[in-house]
Image (cartoon, rainbow, N blue to C red; front, side, top):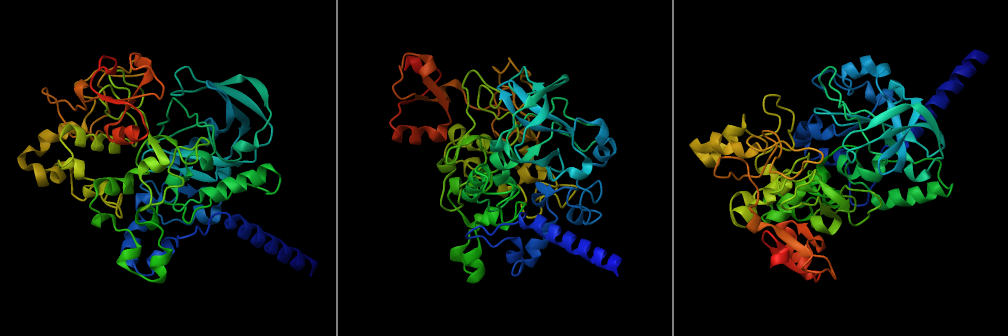
Length: 489
């Protein structure tokens, strides 16, 4: 009898623990209903979306076996487990240690405690690369130091010396491990990974739907004051990029369906409104200007209410000089910069040119992204077929614009000052120079804004800006200039 009572007690305790674990996985964000609420009327589209890559941006890891091990056997090209098979096989050989915090601009604290495979709570990324995160409560820890000599591009972990990390509750949340990996067996980013802020601090709004930033910051302050036990909550209606990420909060629409209370991006006509549907996430922001505090996602953005610049600042160009993000002529060099490439079309070809009016979803599938292995991103079978709809027999020629690297010098740390851009199919500048190379703006099209109170004769007082930022800069009382050298205006 006592044995049965003990087993029953264990089952009760387990059920309570499991229920508590799931409490922080969802959140009822005001104005949002969640993907399941949309499914009631839009079952067909929901079915397409449910297997798309948009559902795989962030998922719960093996620390939650009741979720992690219950995926369909063919959900991922490599099987039913989200983490790549070779990573599971080699886990114990890899530097699976948690990044605790930043010591200084060139040094991070990395915990000496090995994270076990079954302890991984979040898997961020899927088809192209993955990062892993575990929860950290801000406590003191033993740490190694990781160093960078190239501005954070690459990191080296020094295991020769152990130091005392004092702890920091500002860093509490889901923290990334030191590794970044890719699907191919053995393909690991040799530069390692250096993000020292938590996933909630910096990234969450673009990897989930309906993130409630105010709730997060309130919870963080309460945790720091000892009024909360943890900061595991995601404060998002869905831990995926779901319906309301692109259509806006749908609670009112679910209560009383009408075309007037939901956003249909395909029906939008203003180019900036069409673009921001995608580029509020598919972008490279310099910072989140609404909340700051280390975030560079779109937290606080409300689709249909805000413009991009209301919440974020685009990564900065460096006309004629280049930087890690942008070539001397404005081509994007890193992930999530196709939006800025495309937006330069208005300056290159004119506001009313075809590409200046386009948005990502004119060529790229959304609900079905990833569902067709032969053409995972496009509506059509190939880029040539997509471009041929307008460019006919010239399609293969114009595709050169998607290759920002061929014909240009290679760039790298300390060598940013050239026109080199991204590899084939990644550039979206839609412009070729006389030699058939992907090309951005010519010097006479460079845009600048003078710092407030700055000296117009000093080059250091002029900031490179994007062409579409010019009007806002002038409205803010700043002097602007278009041309190669603003000091000679």
